[in-house]
Length: 232
Image (cartoon, rainbow, N blue to C red; front, side):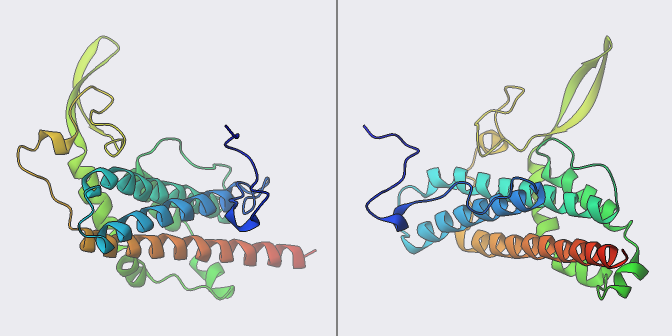
């Protein structure tokens, strides 16, 4: 049997190149490229299910579909945090972990630290009303997903027991969370439906939102670097 990681010598166009679009020296770009791939995978899966509405695999494919959506969100968020930290000249990169709601909250905090006058001088306008409108679908999805996946647990710390709310985003990967509890959809005695056409609209909106934000902050960083270079 042939190796998995090998080139198709017969037809170049039947090759995928793992490192073709990546940059060894720029993790911001790499995160954005990989995020783009996960979003596209999610969209390909959901469109396939909608177009072939008799497909019996919908109830199985929904898990990698949601995983690709959430992981795409996570990678774009981490890329945007990288850009914002570079714009603000922070030494941080991004926080570890997979909590896409907290990562989004970090983005909003960093955004509030931007120098509006400096951005305006570079030709970039920060409009709060437009930002809230642009990110509403993403914000709603993050809140809904967080609510479904947050449970109160008894935690022991330094010989003390206390109640703590814990959110886990591993529900598309495992039927039980890290504490061995059933995921929210298994706790539900009734069928838990996902309207695929509605989900497609939401995924497309979130994809466009995060992609645009990533490009926007990349453009700001480039403009700042050009101004800095011109100053010497």
